[in-house]
Amino acid sequence: MSYCPKCGNKIEEDMSFCPKCGSPLKAAQPAPAPTPMYRRGEKEEKHEKQEKGEKAEKHEKRGSPFLGLLIGGAVLIFLGLLSYLQIQGYFRAEETGAYFLIIVGVLVVFGGLYAAVMASRRHPRT
Image (cartoon, rainbow, N blue to C red):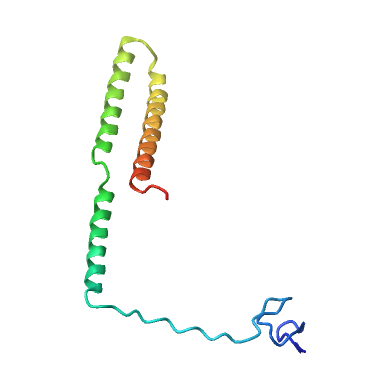
């Protein structure tokens, strides 16, 4: 019967760790990493797959270039509509800022939902 060098708890000879403190009792030697063995042509295939993956990533990062234009256009149309309604007397000037913030917030939420849906279509869960 021997004792743990860290906490002094009684341990058996065949134990690898102390049951009380969890300290390793036997010095574990790290296993050597296996060296990969490539066949002829395997490196070229791997390189081609990496290039295809990089091209796909570049395409995905572009996303939809029209989404920003659509949101910007919608904001400009809404500002014009608010100005027109204010001139016609449908609401006061103090309310214009509140309406503008609400609509911009809605557009941001819809843009986020659109981006999430498009991302889930590109990368479906398995």
